[in-house]
Image (tube, rainbow, N blue to C red; front, side):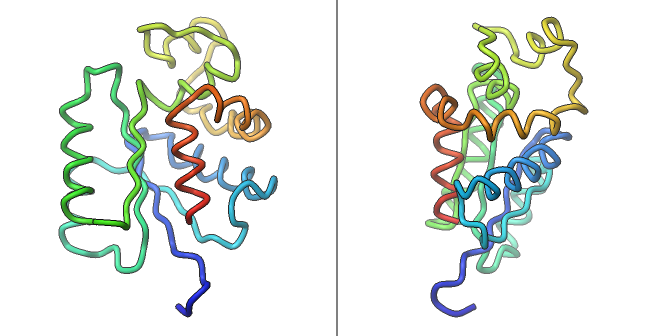
Length: 167
């Protein structure tokens, strides 16, 4: 890799359907040239044990890691704190951690103007629009089309875009 080449970025997310959604969203954001079209960005599912092994084994090489963590409005803060601690301790400047208030569906609720309050956004989506988790990738285009609104309304999405811009 010579100077000027984009850093490889690996996005890790807890959600089973998250990688397909994030990978599709990356394509849509590149089409809109919101992020570096040459950046090599991929997304995979993780569990805390997997991420700990990956990071501690130093198998990331020159890859930047972005971790998207569900907090489930404080119910999952222990898991989120453990993941963030592992990243901070072992990765120095090669990590970017996005802590969601609840889960990735909060971005969809935001662009659809669905107030989720203290409910899980996936529950609100299921109730109001018959959302099923496996359909998560179907929302990537809507997110990309409404990115500016989402940047203004969602700290986690804003962090996500800023991390991608550095990829």
